[in-house]
Amino acid sequence: MNVSSLPHLNAALNFTSLVLLSTGFLFIRRKNVAAHRACMLSAFGVAILFLISYVVYHAQAGSTHFPGTGLIRPVYFFILTTHVILAASIVPLAIATMRRAFRNEIERHRALARWTLPIWLYVSVTGLIVYALLYHVYPPGS
Image (cartoon, rainbow, N blue to C red; front, side):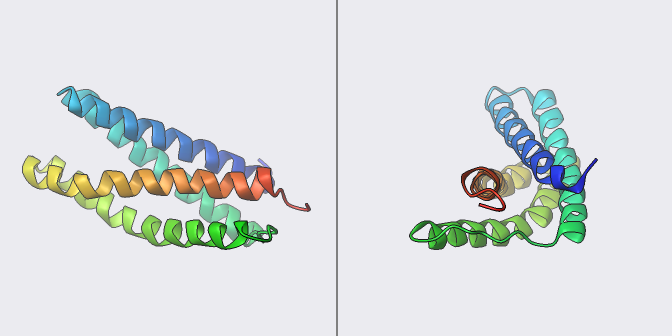
């Protein structure tokens, strides 16, 4: 696989994680614990694949310059900054949330998941926005 295709793979993994998280939330709202668990564990697995691919891409290609100008530039950097800060928080939050579930500490799991899920969803959506802006709205070389 060519390193230049990794951003597209990363976006696909990010989108898959978003769908799994959303579906897992719907399952737990319907009291389907087994399906919820399967979706959330799958989302975590996809996130691990994303992180590996992301690190490989940036180790090989470095960072990507955002060429947009005007109002979109500060909007892009605001989205990117909040995305990066919250993305860093997701790893320990997701691990702690899963750990509580595995220990059958359901009330503590639920309390932390109420923070973890919206942050993770925000990170997924903003990651897709950053990808769209960098590779489709303002593609490299534009």
